[in-house]
Length: 556
Image (cartoon, rainbow, N blue to C red; front, side, top):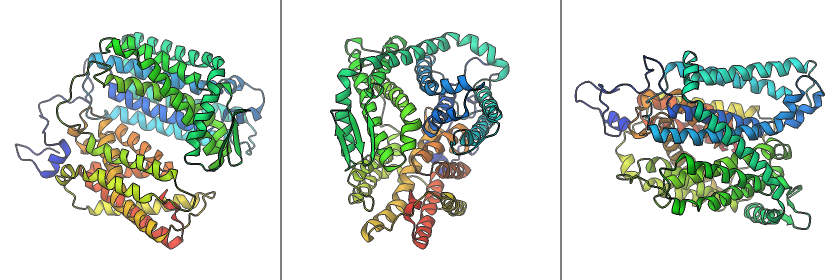
């Protein structure tokens, strides 16, 4: 909270980046009294991100082929459409994001400080409906579970999906304003529908041109897979990529032309949507660059698919991941190419940024640590990671580069944060006990164990909380995130950042719940140090539990 008058506490400086927002300024999160003029682009982006994340979970987790066991019925058209509908939905969401960002650029609407309470309630309802849908899907997609009345299960899943869709839409726009909103943005929605359908159609049609690209895709995927999988092998004569006992054939759909088709459509659309920003004498180079990015994403997908099949689960690799991850990667690569080019003065007319990037102290340590982890794990075996010291050195160096920023913050520990961190560790260990398929991990060698403990206690809590709570949770609700008051974190920022935090860990559910708890600890006093101390306490207690039980997989 901001103190009255001109008095300001040190923690208030931390919350607002040294700048106090005038109480006379209108609240950006308040609903207009005379009807909804527009919807916050930040709110729309947060809700689209939530929808895309849920779609990714569904696409990777469930394989529509499992539903064929029920035979014909009223649900047969739904089962037939499930195979391509997720890819089509991903294309439509990407198109909507592209069109929406163009509209946001023109209107330059200020970001809200938080989502309104009405929105928060409907987001909670949508999440509850999604959780119920997943519970039903676990039974529907389980081939070993006999269901006597599949029609009732399908009807229940459809009802929950409809409830979730209605709640999502109500979180975006009040029901009474839905018709005016639809009329106001009809052109944008129509353009997104046409663009998404065109991108999906061109991507699928381009699969017929697979022959010249097929062998190049196989060679590149093999080179990438061999960098971190010793058993990788390629067989050019029959176009097979293998690792261990798992092998796949590079079919026409795997050649990469689908991604190239999507990329070309999205880049051409960006030329129209952002025509006032591009330097067209150079922007045309984005076409081959975006095509290369999409093809590279396909190579990564193919290598990841074979690695998943060999090391994790053949069913997961050949199921949802095989059918859905490709389109998600292609759309992400295309949109990332456009977004980066729009921020490049070489491709576009960009207003220069004054001063250093305020996001750097929050994001650089995490990004540097992830890059170091990729290199280190490429040389790791099942029992040891010889280059783990590289991860420690890179993370420590990245944090040291911004120590001047961190030194100004209040780092005194909070008793509540310590208690919450310890409780989360016990809950994390309890969830791990329920995973019957999880194999205990052996104790690392003494030197590596010491490095891992130091890394988990002193470095990981810092760079993860900086990125997920300090930056992402606030950035969801405010473009100028450094000025956002942490004590007013919105539900979208908490949920999206916590889910991203959970995805970073092997135990997604436990990680997401822990992320929510850390965000609430951060919100309580507005001190990022509280989230860091809670996170460090969780890791410390997990170290003790792992040492006591002899199972070091708790860190994953």
